[in-house]
Image (cartoon, one colour):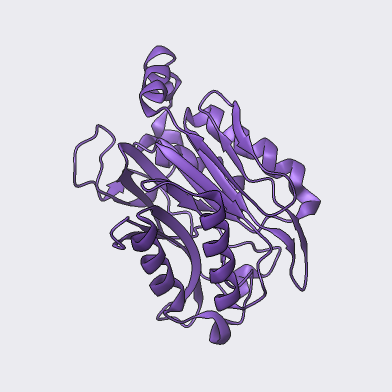
Length: 282
């Protein structure tokens, strides 16, 4: 499975400019058809709370067109508005045919950064089969909540993809937590963080691809870049069989969350939820 992570300086609330930047970067990187391409959180607006300015159909329309044109799998970040009037911070997975396969809504809004005042947390994990792997998207602040990742691993997730606007002040946490999430869940982690600055913060990139054993397979610096790696899914499954730490989990301690998935923990189809005792947004 081939993956690519795109990091760049997001033009504030300027969708056409950001779309053009991503198109140019992918063209220059000569990303192959069939690659899973990951974009940062809210990639075409920046970390904006102005829902009136940023919520429209252009983000998904562009993403679906691009995925179909390049014949890539694409995870893209954007904002939507819920029936309650609050935003939802979203990550959509799109197929090489331009089909929308599912939308993950960030479970943990960043309260310290006032995100929770404008965005409501999601209620469900999302897992989709891509190129023979079980892929689970996450968004930025979700990285600090290992129980969410553990629940996803319990449900069969093998590749975690996380888009972010993670600030430079806590860059060391970003790197350490990405590696930790990979090791503890015996999973690949593919991460895309932005660079540059917005009206409030500076960002240092550091997009990464990490193996289930914690090896960094690819890592970007603080400049705009496209990084890529090949993920050995068969090797991941062998590692889980040889060192079956996930089997020793006491699942009753994990808590609970909804699950939007076509894959049950044993690989069958039709799963809708993980048995649990609490909902993370309650």
